[in-house]
Image 1 (cartoon, rainbow, N blue to C red):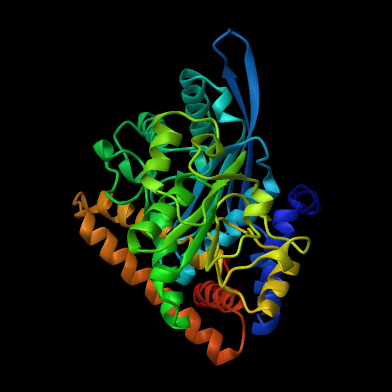
Image 2 (cartoon, rainbow, N blue to C red):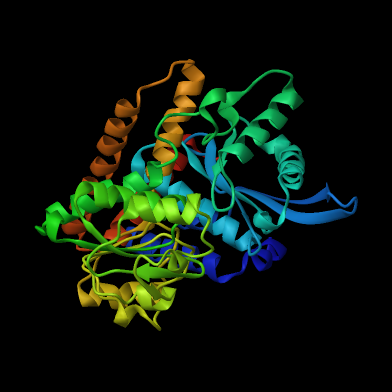
Length: 423
């Protein structure tokens, strides 16, 4: 156990545990449950040998962590990124547990990852990596055990390879082994933009609570991947003015508002190397972007972007966390003292796992829903979760983050207490 704790020790995991400890202290959580829920239920580290296009063999490090399965099969994405490590994956798995419980989904939390820069691999190398990784973690996954999904650096194609590899192992097609896959093999309508759409739904609900006018709102989005780009697009469609967006190389700022569909066309279709190259506004760094005056700030990139070093410079009314763990504990307190309304990550970005749940259900039933049904059910579930969290926050006199954590942790704790201890 000591070796595992040492392997887990990194800033992201420490943040997840510190958040849990704060909530557990307020809840007077049973000490035995508190100790159990701090660490993953199961952690698997694998070596992934891949034959590269030049004939050499390169070995990559891979992980799959299942934090808890008391409420159902574990669920969580797979990310391909050079900085992936066991501690980060374990933290993300823990947050997934609280996220699923908060939304009322019959899942526990899991996460996976491979330490790789996917953009440096050819399509053939990426496929071989994915298939070998799927084969290595095969013993602990399954549609009723642990269901992966896309995350940073992975997409529907990666999920298709993953699903095919698992299906080849068992001898028949198993569409429910992953979510976020192509429609042609059992994917769901509405899955691609689900996380961004969920961010918009809860942000609009927060604006109603605070009495803010959407047509007067300005929006800043850090990160222009799947979550950030869809958040920006749907925010603009809803009537807000998106004034700045960024990717890892920097961003673009226009106080009059950006044309997001045109920006997407220039960035993705025309293949610009960075958002600043689109010349649709002034170039801006990620550091500057986080301190722009705006109504809504959406950090939708990586974790720990808002810290004690820059939190005092943040000038937004609502912080909607599209990313996982973008705000440190110190920054959280600074923002709260400034009067910033924070929509915590386990609530704000839960749209992805909610629609993944819909996909999983559709695969099990072999019956698929219309896009309008997906969006309506997503809005119903995520706004209900927001209202429950906001009411809990008001009743208990705690922040939205603490209310979300306490609510999620309590549901998991109740499941453990109901099931008892085996043997």
